[in-house]
Image 1 (cartoon, rainbow, N blue to C red):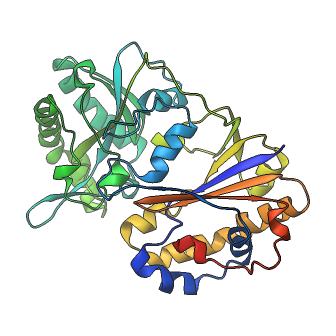
Image 2: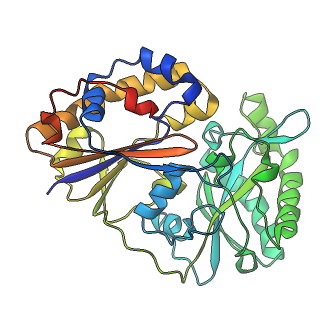
Length: 350
């Protein structure tokens, strides 16, 4: 049986804007798929969760260790290191990301790291400054790529951390690492900030109209000895040069460029993440959100609907989310026979 889960973070519009946004969308293929889908599986969290609903779902799909009672970000560091072909030594590892903190009137706000446009050369230069500072504190720092570094800090294993996307756009105070060693973290974070503050790299970035890289963000803590949970995913579809913390994978990794590649791969239990809506949603740029979402109907939903109709795909699970909810809609060939269910996008707001 060929099966695919299509995960669409932030395809669910905010409740207060749903009616207006959905009125602007003309997506007949997605409207058909959603209207004729079966009963959805829904997960809801509060607005203060340390990770977004789709991030927790992805972590489970990747087989990352699950900590159901821990108010912390998903334990993805080891999985993320493996995607970078890094072999972590025994210990407790975190994902560490260079970021920009915006100074508001009376607090600091984390800016979406996607907006940094951090080059490999600048990232390595900033890494070279930070590396000895962590070494002096008995911590091991490894370089993954420009956006993703890895920190071994065994004594910080109890820290509760937040993903950047969960904290993005908010006062960082409640999203910062919390726990018995949080002062040690803040001390090192402050030291890095001071060394980077007036560095020539940041001066040049500001002259070029780019945001300075003025801090670091810690999250994704995981033990190298923790047993991974079982995953049903047999194929993970990725795009070329897709190197992000949440680009960890389960099963066989298949590089694609279009929906045709996915359908031709005949996935037995595939996973495809289309995450282009995250950036405009976090920025509140709803015109861009509409444009990107609209384009998906021709590029993705219409071909997948056609594949279901012609038996090239037996089952499709469409998972949509926003910052506090995640809903999964199962669709198969028999679902499409429900002709009395008129195409509609209203389920995006359910």
